[in-house]
Length: 326
Image 1 (cartoon, rainbow, N blue to C red):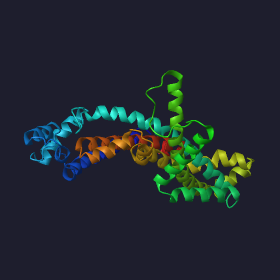
Image 2: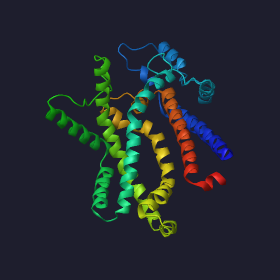
Image 3: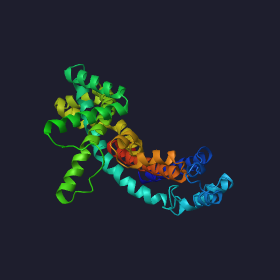
């Protein structure tokens, strides 16, 4: 088992290196950091622009492989360079942003996965009955809607709740109010967390429920469930002791990788609720032609996929004894 995990870890490290290097090279080819300094009023002297580009290792007169080598030496030391908007290291900005994204996404992802699994399991058990039909219709409606529309619907619902209650029970923008302190501050932060979390739960639950329902339907007609019933287990005992566990095995990889990509993928959620997390930082970095920041966000995402992949392998081994003994 340890040998299997070690081999997988080395494979993931190689993929992280390839993904991050490709992001830097593609960013250096397609992005133009000099545009960030051009068109200013008053115009910046050419010497100042060249000095700034040199500071960010983005001088186009330097060959791209020379810039890549300089950047790679810094990455080995944990230095992703300087952000294009000033003299602050990229890793400092990422350190601030990642906490915002984690606070926003962890609860929504976990709740979405739990609700999606439960809906999928009960939909499969009650196939073609009222619960299955209604959950299928709702899931497909949510999957067919653009993300922006779902977020606006969630905001509209909470706006109506605020109007009905007579005060702002659930603020719809920003992570916190800096004018508050003590209990009022934490209460305000918790209430601001509710609307974006509901939006993320709707996204996750609609996806996971469809996958879980299909996996569960495959298991319900299997021989081992009939054998479990023949040994004296009730339908519920056989279902939850053997059926759900088996149906969760193919879902572990999907759960793990979904969370890894969600951290930088929730662009619209962060933007429309005005949270300054990693997704928002990625958009700003592309708009600013910031090669260092785009490469760092890509590396961060690749590391998350690495962690997600390792977590998926461990869960897979926990659920399937054949992996542990192979």
